[in-house]
Amino acid sequence: MIKRIFIAMTVGIGIISFILYLTEKEETINKEVDLGVSIKYEPFKSNEDYLNIATEKFESWTIENEMKMSFIHPRENEFNFSKADEIVDYAKKNNLNVRGHTLVWGSSVPDWVKEKAVDSDSAKKILKNHIQNVVGHYKGKVDSWDVVNEAWEDDGSYTENIWYKLIGPEYIPLSFKWAREADPNAKLVYNDFNNQIINKKSKQMLKTLVGYKKDNIPIDGIGMQMHLNAEDPTFSPKNIEKQMNNIEKHGFQIEITEMDVNMKKIPDKESNIQSDIYTKVGEECKKSNACGGLTVWGVDDSYSWLSEKDKNATPLLFNYEGEKKDVYERLINILEETD
Ligand code: GLA
Image 1: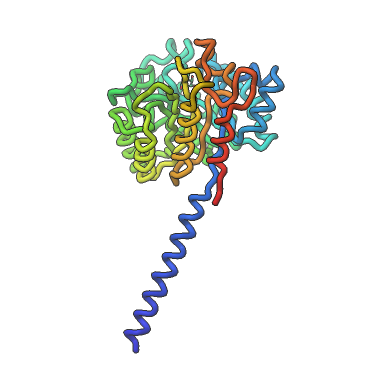
Image 2 (image 1 turned 180 degrees about the vertical axis):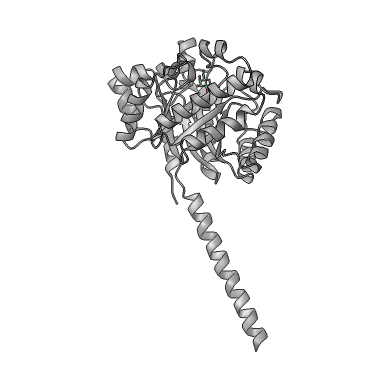
């Protein structure tokens, strides 16, 4: 008798666990992925159509340039918050999520830093002061920060930026620690390009970040920039899926932070390549339990960093006239779809 009761209980517990597992799975499949966009100050201020698209068609804003160190901290004792403040305040009033970009990046270092940072101690002091002032200023307003941007090269070696040269690789965990101290509730992200698949660079990145996590360094997520090229023959959703699983396994969240699809010589009207690439990446993000957002790098083609260099570039979801391309609907349907 006791044996029977025991078997019945075991089976019962098994069934309940299975139902709980299915419910949990269902919830994760049903998660929504925010579609975000990067915002430039000039059109934000002066172009009403731009502002309408950015507000109505996207759920999250990243400040494209006005929070980079050269801009926001132009002199030793001067912070230039006003333009970023305007964007952040507007976004908050309109219930948009805000991504801060980017606290530490070797390609945005003001001249005064190059003079004043002369050894490890002076560089640490400057970097800590920068991070804590900026993060402190936006405490409670910026939901997630790209804390360190582009710290590794394609061959897996460290990028030799000023912080690395003076402080060594330690500048990475220190930056995350300082950011967390300044706003304990903001999500802290490491952001890079070519890390959406497994390669020398992303292996080194992940190994190092996993090590930091074990040492309790507060790194919440990994940003995949996803500046993609429609002519890239190696593009593979399967490989992106593998890498997303790989990152999730180590307990990091994922955000796609700067997506665009450069068409180069492919005339976009004659091809679905761009639309397919966006939607395949969207599908991978949707499938992954770890991936919570997909941000595109610009509102429409005329305001892309790529069209600053090439007047024919068409990498985004809205065209030069601010008209929605078909890909927008395809992508939003995937990201918002619930069963
Ligand atoms: C990197 C940076 C972005 C932007 C692009 C294009 O991806 O993270 O802020 O500047 O380069 O220049």
